[in-house]
Length: 278
Image (spheres, rainbow, N blue to C red):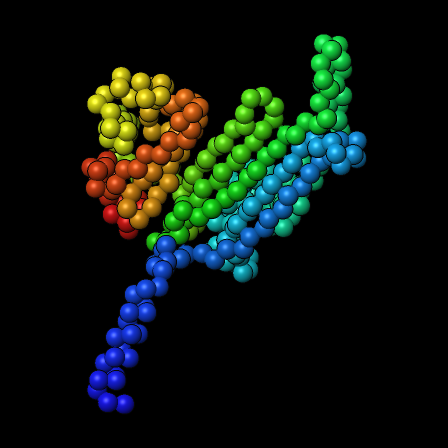
């Protein structure tokens, strides 16, 4: 191979490398397994009468053995997704028990439907064909590096009424399975300063001059713009999430406020579970 051919080959190699999509994280801490299912309760065993639908999309850290350090993180993720009572169950057992509890609601739903049907007849209204309740639960990884796992759990539910409800809960978990709280990373007496930082960033995000102007845009619950514990850590900063009706009207929906580490460095402890990111 002559020099020109060699240089051309090397150049093409680096061009191809540069064109590849960059990974979200440089060094992932954990590998994950996944489980998906969609279960339906049919009222009175009639497949035209839907009582409730449960849609699950669950990812969780893989544990190789009982001594694996990931086991504590796995327990934390299971607890956050299904509830504390499932924390000590293996993923497959937790899933099985959760689904059983869902199907055990069949008789209750049938009773509720029968009652609604009677009310409809009394008021001479059209009898509805089903309940059509639903719940969808999904978790996703927001950050997975530097011995930290940031997790988002999104729940969409409908149990009657004009519309359903979406909630987003976020958690940051250490490699030992500990959920990071505000007190773990912020200096003592941080609340007021952090509240002001959140308000200032929300004003900037919405190009508002003050809280009155922000309220006119639909952020009608400005008293709720406080550190609410619903935050996650990423490589560049901290993101707070506020649910529907928490700081704004339903039409605005879920709100996110990102604070870079530079913006709040004066509030952060020098020694904390996220010190490696600072």
